[in-house]
Length: 212
Image 1 (spheres, rainbow, N blue to C red):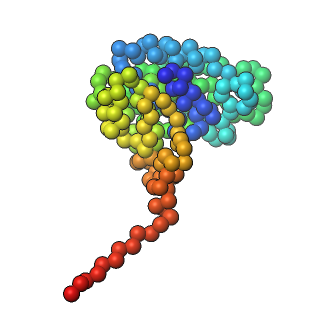
Image 2: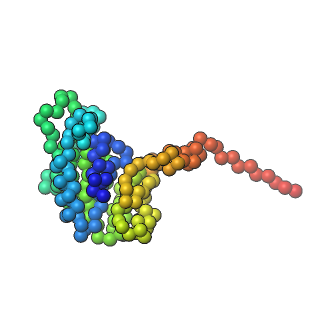
Image 3: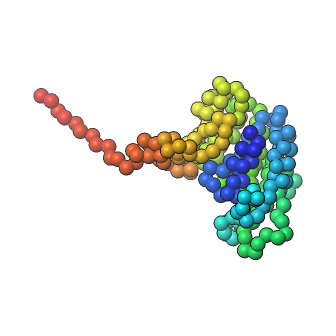
């Protein structure tokens, strides 16, 4: 799961609508997961968008400022790991060192808002009810994932999560053209792809007839 989760947060430097910016972990596994994710973060290679790099630049200086202002909200002691910015980065690139953050409450802005940059927040939970409550506490709801070997738990949580797409033991966005894609809340309304997308280009007509 960890390679999927880290990549889902830092791909395209976190500038994706479906970025996995929050990771909820069973409290008994929290420290272990944070430590293993931290190892991956420290090994990330930042640089121009090439095959030998993991994280590229942000789209603009303004977006870099937005992301850095978000990261400044975290106590430095809560940053579990950050990747290093090499000294030979080309001038003019808007690079941000990817950050893994832990130890925040679910009501913290970093745990509720879209950072749209290379950062992930890890939050612990004790049971399914708490996990669902934390997951649904944000105004956004585009993509979620559930990672567990318990099939019944997968389906229970998938039904409870307020998201347009829920992946089980996987993470991604979209899928084939037959899979509707869209969100709830501030992640938007309506759907792309599938028959649901075609419905948006049709008009429902009601015809009422009186007989006799």
